Image (tube, rainbow, N blue to C red; front, side, top):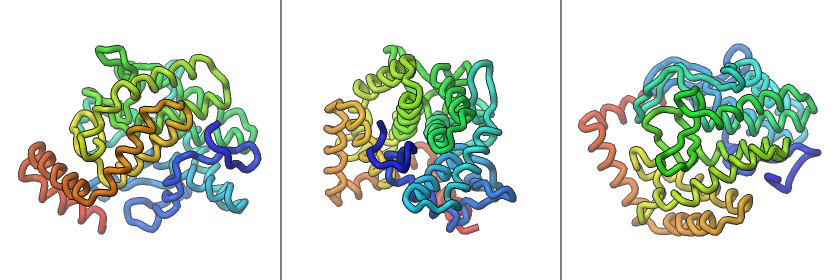
Length: 311
C-alpha cells in the first residue's frame, strides 16, 4: 500500500530521506551506546539520551539498506533497534507510549515526561515492517499499543488534540498549547497507514480520514506566501531541509489519498524553492521572528549551538 518496491512482503518507507540516517554516526551529535543502540546528544548539553524517534528512524534507514543489499548486518541493526522500542514502551492503561525526560529548545514543555507523536508514528512504521520481515506478532501487538496514543488526548497521556472546530491533530510534541508541527503530523499519519495495511482496521481508517480532513482544511495556514511554515504556534518559516521534506510528504499524501490540495501545495512549495529571493526572504524572516521571540539571546543561542555541535 505504501510503496511498490519491496523485498518479500516488507515494504520500503515512502520518505526517501530516511536513508540519510545511515550518516548520523559520522557526526558528534549521535553515537552508539554499549548495546549498539543509537543515542542523541541533548541540545546545548554534553549528555546523551535515548530519543525514540531517532531510534525508529535509524532502524528504518538500516532496513532500507538491507532491502537494497540483502546484507545481514543491516538487518541486525534494524531488529536491534526495533527490539529496543518493544522493551522500552511504557504501558498506560490500554495503550503505550515512549516517554521523554528531557526538553528541547524553542517550545515550553508543560509536562515532563512528554510524548512525541512523530515517534509514535515512525515507531509503528518500523514495528509493522519488523512484523512483515520476521512474522513475529509481538511487533504488531506493540504497534497496536502505540497506535492507541493517537486516540487519546494530550491530557490523557496521548498525542491527540481536538480543536474548537472539531479537527483532530496529532502533535509531534504532545504539549499545550499544541504546536501543530506539520512534518510530525504527517509522519504520524504514515504510521497509521502502515498499521492499517497490516490490520485493515476500520477504526484506524476512520482516524486516517479524520486527520486527512484536518490537513485539507488547514494546510493553507502553513503557506506564508513565499515558503512553508514549520508549525502554527511560532510560525517560523521552515528551514530549507524541512521545506523540502514537506514537499516530499505532500507528494506521498497525494499518492495515498488522491486529494488535489496536497498536489496543489506540493507544486506551490516546490516552485518557491526555485526562487533565490524566497530563500533569502525566508532566512531574513526567520531571523526577525527569532529575535522578536528570544531578543538578544539569539547570538548566544547560535554560539552555544555551534559549540554543542563541535563538542
